[in-house]
Length: 153
Image (cartoon, rainbow, N blue to C red; front, top):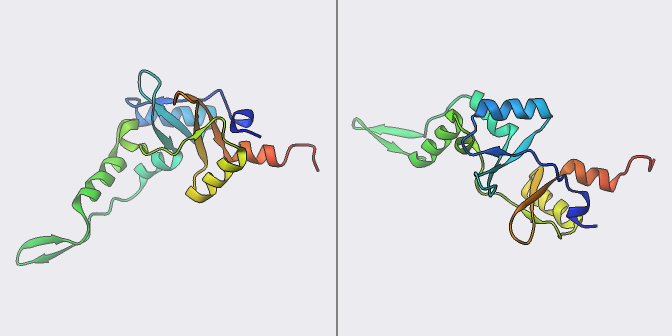
C-alpha cells in the first residue's frame, strides 16, 4: 500500500505570517495537532505543532554562564538561547515553526512512512508529489487505521 492511498488529502495549512493565536484557533476548531506551514505560493516552508504553541507557556531559561572578574563566560551558546527565546516569545507562525521538515513522497510505501515516524519520533509527515508540491499529510492515525481497520476484530 502506498502513502497516497491512505493519506489525508484535505490538508489544513497555515501561512508564515499567521499569528500564533490564529493558528491555535484553527487547531482547536478543526481538532488538529499540527499543520504544514506554506508561503503565499503554497510551497512547504515548515510545520507547526501543538507542542510549538504550548512552548509559549513555559518558563524561559537563560544560557548557563559563570561570572569571573565582573564578566560572563557562557557555558552554552548564546546564539542557541536567542533562537529558543524567539520561539518561546514568537508572535507569528514563522517564529515558532520547525523549518527543517521531514517529508515523504506520495509513492512511498506505508511501511516506509511508519518507519520514518518511528525513527524520527514524529507524529505526522507532509506528503509531496514528484514536483515537490504538498498533496497531503500522513499521520500515525492514518497508519493505525490502515493496520487495524474497523470491523477487523
